[in-house]
Image 1: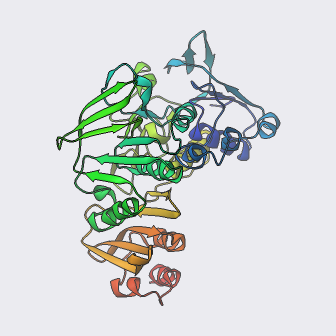
Image 2: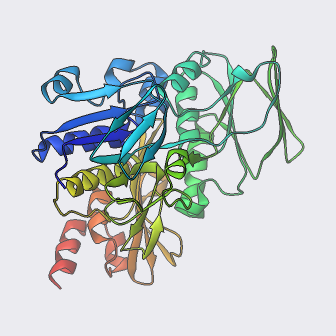
Image 3: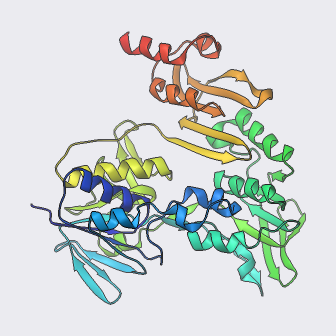
Amino acid sequence: MTVRTVVTVGAGQVAAVAARTLRRRGFDGRIVLLGDEPHEPYQRPPLSKEFLAGREGGESLALMTRKWLDANDIDIRTGVAVQRVDTATRTVEFDGGSLAADAVILATGGRPRTLASTGSRPDLVHYLRTLDDATALAARLTPGSTLAVVGGGFIGLEIAATARSLGVSVTVLEQSDQLLGTVLGARVGSYCADLHRRNGVDLRTGTGVTSLTTSDAGVRITTTTGDTIEADAVVVGIGIVPNTEVAAASGLAVDGGIVVDAVGRTSAEHVYAAGDVASRFSPRAGRHIRVEHFDNANRQAAVVADTIVGRQSLSDDPHWFWSDQYDSNIQFAGTASGATEYIVRGDIDSGEFSVFYLTGDVLSAAFAMDRGEDIMAARELLGHRVDAVRLADEDVDLWDMYEEVESA
């Protein structure tokens, strides 16, 4: 089939990367991006950091410049709510019309999990997923104000760090006993907890929420430990729910996400999915996995674009993500679950170090605090047998270790 029109349902990171990749591969057909937000494609990572802090404006978030869009004839339609795709004809149906396509990319992302609340001021309960969310939250972060954050994941912690930098008093409530323990392991999770406490955050682990009430006086939270937290506003960061409604209405396979193969193909021919919403088969893992990271969205989008133009590519690298908190850059690669040994490189007390997670003698994950170069090398070493003693020795070049294992 000759593809002349590609339509993306969603106009975020996946849509932007897919459009760029299609043009770079020489695709000269029609590209239409349908977004339900009122904004053209923008970056989400700065929403909890630079944009929220007021250090960057909305114009700096643009994923594609107007000059590039015009030069590459990209049709972006905002405020479009898509209902379904007729997979037999690949017609995208939305409020007020429809659009025929040769290939459709579902890039519908996800929405925040919500927390039940009562009271007269629901506007004091914030979530952070969109530009409008960030704009509303930023108005609350004034010096001397108080903020409660429910959820000690990376988004919640980035918001906490940004709020502290603005002079806001912050309380973070994390239901698990260990901050980030399932992702980073107990030892590194404890370091991250200490980082926030040193910066003035009232961090309470092992603390869930039993009730959340709003009024003109602010928010009042009752916790599972019997405490009461009062704040001017609250941010809830307890994960996202994949937006699979369009896929389900279109008769596509859905199981914790839109089910796709290794290159993003759904159960319907010439209909693809990528990014946060996609449950992609990973040959490396031997199962379907859904990953909610910026880097994953970029790579999946490029693979789908390649597939559409008949170019073979596959991205099945281990997970990699980063987070900026206070003056520290945190990076992580791989999967820490199941690790049997933790190797520290550098000095944890100095705040500049790396941790390598070994499963037996195989490197399965790596964490770095302000040591991005270590992560770059570790990403190449993942899955290889390594010498734990040499990993810990800072006189040993990690890139030399990689060359050795590659040539072995």
